[in-house]
Image (cartoon, rainbow, N blue to C red; front, side):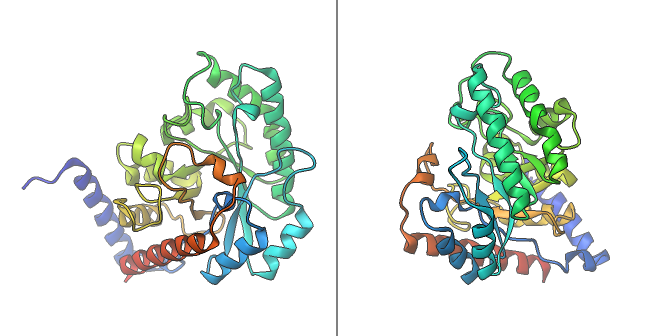
Length: 314
């Protein structure tokens, strides 16, 4: 029987991975760097989150970008102490962009809030040793467009902070998000076009998310290959936005594609972000979560990922 189209692409990736394993086994020696995005843990203390990750052999954390004002958010010295106590390093910071701090807004006040937010977040990221700040070109949770000038306003606004990314040696990682949640920049190709329009050495990288890619890309594995060296962080959740292994995501193809682009190197992270099904997980960032549920979520995800990675490399 003739394979389905996506199966043909899967097989192409599988053959390329087999060739890499046979011809350059040294390129598979280092495992992929696992991190975890902690904003989905809600109001839980950073110490409790760090303890959970350490217990599951996760050595990096993507910190909630919670510097919404001068008096809010993690403090660098305390953050470094807590992470150090658990043997964890900051991979980067998950920038949070809503209508109040929207780079593409038709409100100058909102765009100024986005600039101020990024200034605070970039400085914090550098202070804790993080490598990137996730940037969303338009507000998350606003799938309807303001008008036809969103792209241009977003590009112009991000340029106002682009020098700071260079100054602090922090990458701007542009994240494409599904069209159910944002009004533009939905695919890896869209992110590349946005980066090209900003045209600044401080804005050169991509934050992928397989949950959004599952909806917007024709093939997740091929999109990862297209992202190539621009990819610096990849959010992971299964097809139902739950723990890895609980849905129908072809995780093996994702892992093989990552090895093919040499993603198992310093400064590149695979970061689970299983937020659960539904259209709007974002209120959870300011709510209480059940630590028992979170413990199991992390355990299942990390165990499944490492098992699949090991099986492919065997």
